[in-house]
Length: 90
Image (cartoon, rainbow, N blue to C red; front, side):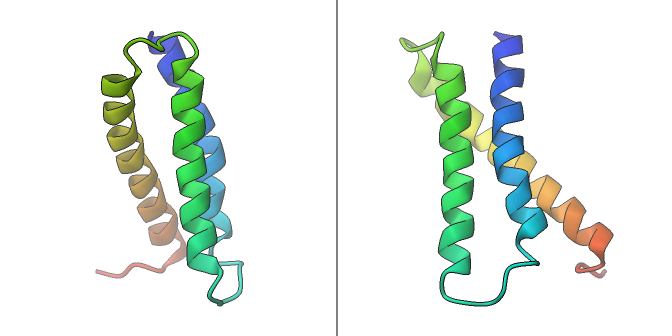
């Protein structure tokens, strides 16, 4: 189960992390925020789908915990990227 969780986490981070990296490179427009939110939702769905291949009968509790944990990981990584780029000041 741990190996499957690592695979799902790698899929989620691989799809979700470029959203934060390339978010600054995108121009401003009405389409930017829906596109970024859609990519994050896609990354979560891809991670849950990767995990659901083996654990279909118990996917609801696993998916709810997984989404919360991976959302926290993605927010932390976004904070780190913004901090290292100098967008966050204390």
